Image 1 (cartoon, rainbow, N blue to C red):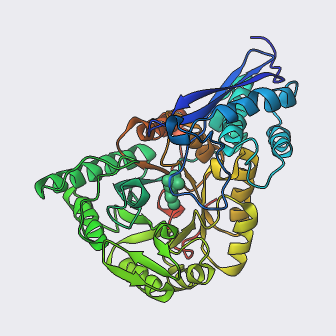
Image 2 (cartoon, rainbow, N blue to C red):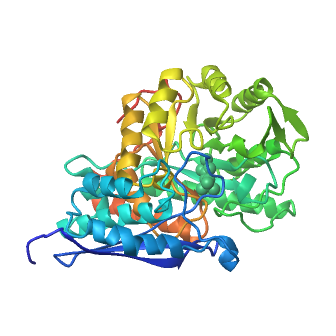
Image 3 (cartoon, rainbow, N blue to C red):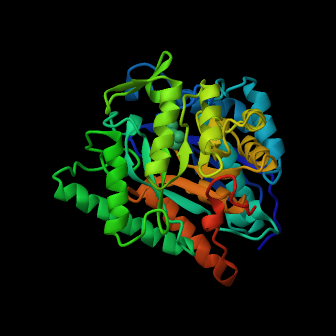
Length: 435
Ligand code: PGA
Ligand code: ZN
């Protein structure tokens, strides 16, 4: 093998398609030593208003979601700017993208273009170094597999708003390895499907593979999730717990939260009360975006009420921004961060948000989007950055399974040295954090 030479020779983009059949950007990076890196940008459906913007063509084709302009930016602006740079200097590459874009939200080049390029550069650098991507990120650290959060029912913007709750997820807290965690997820997911079938409620799956939530109230989704855990032979709250993504910005109207499924309109205090009650009645150990992205006092009130026992995650609330994480930590708005590379637009900015969360003593959750592909970069980020948890949707549809299966491969590659984050990687702030 010739000596590594990670200088970037070429950067190209191509249109490929995501799990919703929509156009997205794949970037491909070739290095002087022949190494190649490739990555595909995902796309959200319930986006935070402060996240990086995907550059889309507008017009009639593909419902306005074409990516020709994003690809033109890669060919005309990015490729010449990155040529000759070292792929091994991710920070410099990402800074070049940030400078070239020149906006606060990547609207000129498009977060879809910058995310794909940033990740493809990392893939190329790892290939040049002859390492799996997770090892390249980890360097000399000890690898650790994250605790998976696996969707059982998909709702909100991912299921035509059939129920208000966006994600009802299982957390296999009793698992002692990632492999075992997937076995538990498979059994609970299957049991939930059987229950839906018996009740005549089986209608297929939502955007992230969770069962279509054919329920008459939000609570019924929680009850059925608990029933599925039991049906699979596990103890709710001991072997398998629940996690929710409320994605509350999606049903905020003016000063109120409109829970359509429950025919209720709640103010902030009412919404906090409702969520606290669910946390008491159900084995819920994690709640994401409990209040809307602009409801700071609501986030703070909810975290003050449950934060010692329940993980409170900011997704739309923090949009993978180090600055927002630091501010939210100072104010006690939440106690964990969801990390989505395409909310920030580069790996370096995503890593900065993770570091800010660690500095605050928070837990970290690497996450996919509702529009995904076969790309498994986030699994490598989660392992390589020693994130506590990994959220990639449900236990169906290959854009989801590609991630779980990749994590199984990584765990196997670690063999005796394998470490699973386990139960210590999730829970209220009172549980010691094992970074
Ligand atoms: P997305 O949301 O549809 O924007 O990807 C997923 C989430 O809220 O976690
Ligand atoms: Zn979310």
